[in-house]
Length: 208
Ligand code: CO
Image (cartoon, rainbow, N blue to C red):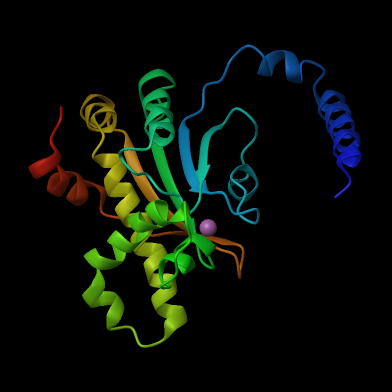
């Protein structure tokens, strides 16, 4: 990739934006008021804004390998805290994707160095749902299902945070689990049962 081209692209983008609205960047600089916190994978094929069709300012975004929300990860926890308490988003989305390299790696018995503790969180998801996953004969289908279950479990991790529990009580914030199907380009809503998960989580993880 020609890095210089990126700056040319940027100039062209600025020109196009100003052509439509001469105050575009002036308005952007005044502040942000997004309604969605999007937590997705770092995978270069799974963009946040583009696949949702939203513009700058509309989504607060956090991406890491395999869209994880480990409760000891300072970055993910800070993003949730800031988005929920300060930006006051009303929707938190965890978006996974089929053909996720992180999930694939967690399904294999391999020492991957520093990635081991990160991928361990996905292996824990596998262990939680071992019976269902092991009953799936087809390896690709099992892989897809683990992608979905990982999204579901990361939604549970989002709900375990005090910020989200409080925001749910005070203003009805909701958590959504989605999967991006790279093969078709379609966004799939897993329709996780937010109220049921919230009820189950509150039994043990009640903080607020
Ligand atoms: Co991925």
